[in-house]
Image (tube, rainbow, N blue to C red; front, top):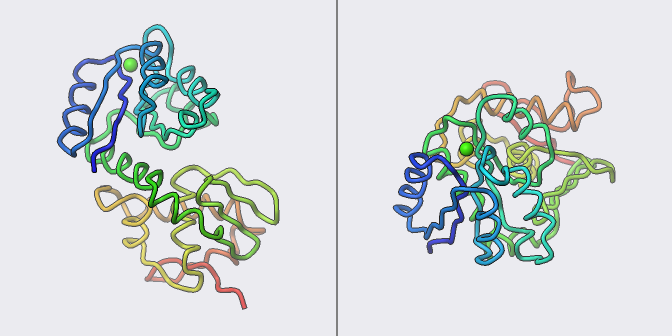
Length: 236
Ligand code: CA
């Protein structure tokens, strides 16, 4: 069941701690302490997942990410990448730039958070996950989610969603009309290991509404069911 994970991180203590935790989960972990070596290893091994620090010697994480996404080998281009970033300008760059990373965690992060994100990404990219995603895209109210390729459109125009916004919307759109509690959404979109505030869900719903609704103050697509949670309005 274990996956092959490439960990590119130059701080020995962080690297050792992440590697230890992932190995305990049954994964095999290769480590690289600089970006250039990490990229070489990624090309040689084509891992199932890459965990990538931003500030690295020889080649920074942005450059490594770009190189992987522009790689000639399709298999490598599609490898899921989690970026590990510091809570600084660097973090803002990671969040603001479309790096081609699938997810990110901000230092200091809990190991539980990282392993939960890892698990979620591996599940999504596993053959079973791909097969599930290969079914018809989710569509409702002019919004179409291509789960397999993680693309979203509204009335035929591409919209840019952050990884967690996408996951949350995909949960809701799997069953239009059904009311999901915020606890349920947190478990489904963030993973049961995620230790977070229920307001995290509200914040992401607000961001989604800003991208999806004609008037975010009077939402017609994602409805609030007071005291319960949220649902996608069922189409008639
Ligand atoms: Ca570093």
